[in-house]
Amino acid sequence: MSEDQQQIESEKDMNLVGHLSELRNRLIVTAIFFVLFFIVGFIYVKDIYWFFVNDIDLELTAISPTEIIWIYFTMAGLVAIVGTIPILAYQIWAFIKPGLTPHERKSSLSYIPALFLLFILGLVFGYVVFIYLIMPFLLSLNDGMFNIMFTVDRYFKFLLRVTLPFAVLFELPIIAMFLTSLGIITPDFMIKNRKYAYFILIVVGVLITPPDFVLQIVVAVPLIILFEISIQLSKVVYRKKLKKHEEFLENEG
Image (cartoon, rainbow, N blue to C red):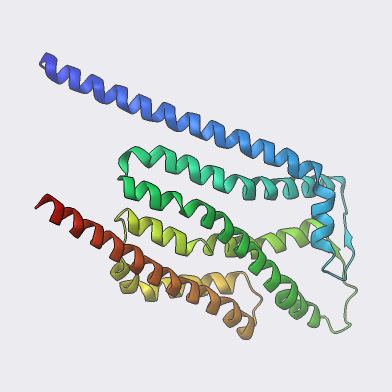
């Protein structure tokens, strides 16, 4: 191997080490913020807990000391996850920023606040579906047959199983816009695979709702509408991307 080739290989290794070092530092920063938000959530765990249980007419029961500890860590962890989302999104953006054009940097940076807001909106939507649709349906099945008792552990696990998928799925529009701006997907690709997306969304709706056809439709329809909104937003981003490309070619010509 010649000296030039050795130098090129050495520079590649240094660049790789530099990228890995930068990624590690950004993950450390994200982890620090996660811990800080976790501490904040731990301090206010009682307020968060009462916020959730005020909407139900049931008294939750803890059958072991570990459930009390579990609820503290769960509430604090939820706060940490929500609070860290914009931090993580910014760190990812900053890491890939050198490979983006000035226009892509500006447009993709604007997605971060929307990413956070849509996650919150998804949590709220999932919580409303849980409190006003799923819980009343399940309780109506009792019809006085049983003495109902919910443990803290089971109730909040069920609540999070319903709400968190909505929070993730509500990110679809922003993810679609971001991937379109990077050229990874196109509106045509999303339209072509629409039926598979519908199938996945319906399966998710079935998994997070009780076995009631009406409830499953109520849950699945908003998710399908969300996917259609994602397609339309992807089209907007794609048209702007094509326009910028045409303007660039005209200026070059």
